[in-house]
Image 1 (tube, one colour):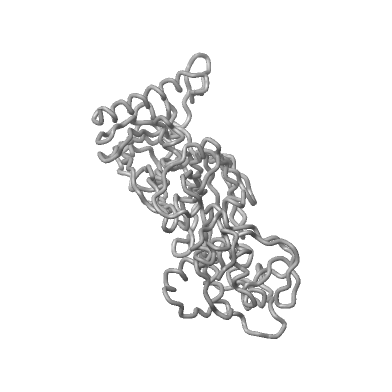
Image 2 (cartoon, rainbow, N blue to C red):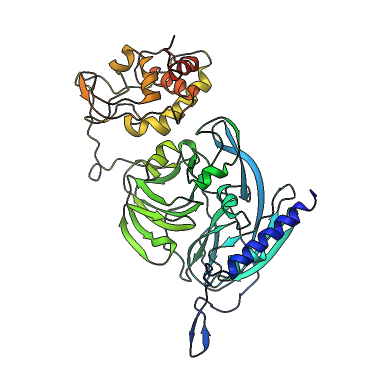
Length: 487
């Protein structure tokens, strides 16, 4: 029976696709007809020259721009692989992928090219897989021709008749499960004249993930079908992993440069409100098509859709890539960075210093030596960077009149263990920090962070930013979570 499973799955997938294609829900991408004759736009004749092997790269990288002035036969090789990787620090997940990454590699061709697509399915896969490319004008976007059992290879060709930025994804039944496990990517079909020159190009694709465990629950997590049906993701991520575009993995630019982002949304469920905090999109290709909008703050990217955006980086600093359905960014992982290097540009952006009137120097991180601190401090810094810094800022100075400082905080240092309950359960109402009143709302982080993460981030803050030091243990957090008091 086990030997028959791949064939049965392949047959089931093919039947599902055939039923879909034959239904009224399937809208065929047909060419226009004038006086009974069919006209096809985007067809620039047969391929010229020898076939070209597409050089695919892992995200966020993209293949080089195309400078050809003629159509070619482009060979694209993809392999479906089921791999266990980290979805967050200490959390593993069984991803289903194209070429071992989520998203799969960006495919880049020219309008009018003939694409010869080879789809292999790794012999160690447990499922049949296929591919539906939204750039294909034909049955199932190629899905009907590529149902591939483990250990097999399928080949089909298509002509890229329309320019634009398009999603591709697995379409084997159950389709939502294959997509939710990470089987999607982007294909860019450049117009014949190519794309305008920019200084940097990157590839970012959002997806929603559904695990049986809670957010940041450690260990190997399984797919949760019920959460997916309820559209209640555990994680919302860029490029398949929390932190994939932050810290050492951040995208980079320089003052005065232009950046192009090929942005996809694999879904399977959520629409992305894609925004770059600190940036404005000079150009945004609406839904990945040829209509271009200008000076855009936030652009919608539907599930199974894309956009291509371009922005300039006139000043140094860190820009944040977010889904501006903002809880997804700061509480579910949809966060990235563009680090811009270069000299200050005070005529464009000029930071006005704020802080204690005593004239004290800017706080400098002072890390105390705490036993077993290396990993705990690193984890605490990660949590602080991903969650706390959004309000309290990267230097922990807060925002005057809005969010209190954690740096040199008399409120924190007076009773560090009080902070456990605040992080777990949130805080509202007026408090006084360093002689200044604040009345903002601190959201509860207990549902999102485990005991160890809360202990680590509090220990990190206590031993940094000119605070007095100390440590919080996971056991103390556990006691407060259970309704008791820390020892």
